[in-house]
Length: 91
Image (cartoon, rainbow, N blue to C red; front, side, top):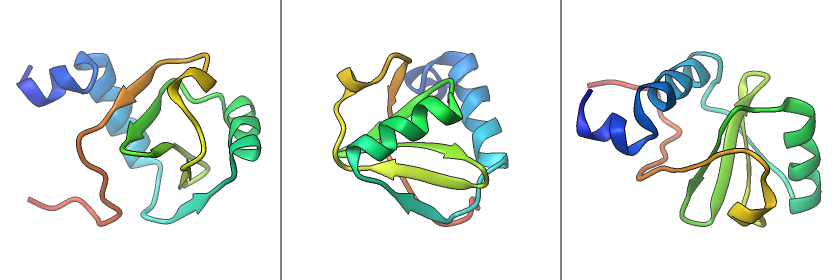
């Protein structure tokens, strides 16, 4: 396991991120706090990701996000990402 994967939550966190990426597009949908928290309950993601002021997760082929939440708003793990990009993966 490389250092980046360890930082992202270990092997399980890396596998979850890869699975979410395979089911999402580069399209993003922005929500206000209350609607985002309601969507989290509906979608029931295993992990919420956090980068700077944005919390996000993949659902229904899109990246759902909000700038209005804090980590304490969620009853599930919040993983702190070091980078977020809406471009397709390439090396």
